Image (cartoon, rainbow, N blue to C red; front, side, top):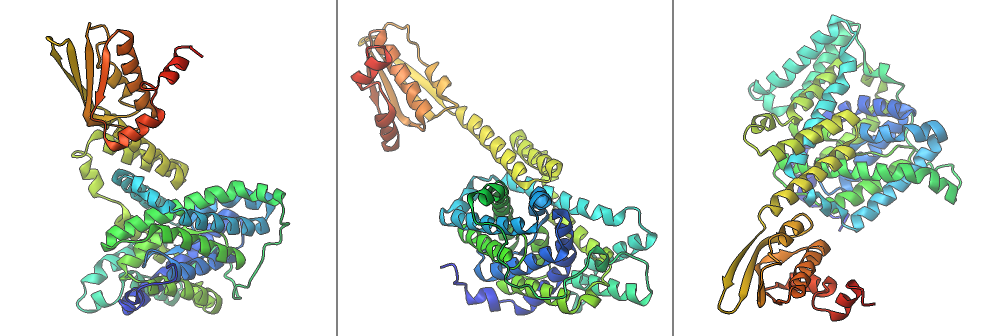
Length: 497
């Protein structure tokens, strides 16, 4: 059931989840503001969305410990809609995005993740690590030396604090980094960019807000071209992030439940004046590395985010961006699969091409869906090409009987069908041809057409043809679509009717 969760998901790691949730909440604030600015809306739209999505996914999500909120990948898809039609149409598009994602969950589209190869996941992870680092560069260019000093100090705290006896394991180092640098910035009145400079924080709690748009076909025609890609990108990023967190925590997750959860969370965000969002790999990694494992960490992150921006805005606005940049650089370094660089020498060329292509497309377009699509497409093509090489045909001749037996071995499908047909000698004078397919499998219409072609050609040459050894699955597709054993169909092909 969607609402059922194990007690262990909530109470199994209370201290770790609370502290990790606090770190994530602090890291979410500037990102939510930045993504709102990208989308062209007020900062509160992103902040309200992050609160709502995180809280709902904490209860309904299929992956405990994963953080969902407003994201840059989704914000980029909203720019034109906001510019041309305004906020109300964005809220309507957010609602439709949620509906589409819930439908995807009930159609079990989360299971499609099984088609995403390991090399695509690695490329996706590396691309996101690069994008996370690149997103910090504006905070590190054309700035004073104070920013570099604070960022370096922050990284020093993050990586060295865990080595302190007892306390190093007790508190998450990213939280210590944020607190220490904020204290230093306030005490010494350092002239440095802060969270408050990102945009005005909201001063009120979100309220129920039905989009003020006409409920007609014209509205649907406006929002559907935006909602459909938002739903796809949101699910892709969420499911890929869930896969990565699965590996980090050595646990499993329910991908179809995650689809429904993201959909319901986006519906909730749209009704509370927020924009569409999805899982965030950066914040999810922060959560895991800070000790968060259960649903409580996601709930704490969303709840504290709202409490801090509404009631503690005076203090939150003083957090130096350099502290948060340090945390995100740590995330970038920790997310990137450094092992994949070493593996370039060991792995097959096709695997490396898929990984590098995924990274290149994601970084070039800043669109996760394009990168994953290219990666999956290339991986599928390479796999089909590789499998086709394992299909071969052997033959033996019984001269006394004038019979040649062809033994087909391997997978016959669209990419190996031509190789299958060219393996037969149709000009050889034979009384009988036996095609033994005990060790073969026919997968698609192309392979069935190839089989028909071979049988009919031999019959035209005057040979009797016997097909033996079809397995049950191959028999089903050959009986349904094959014509070599259907005289009336052969007549049509030859022009009889």
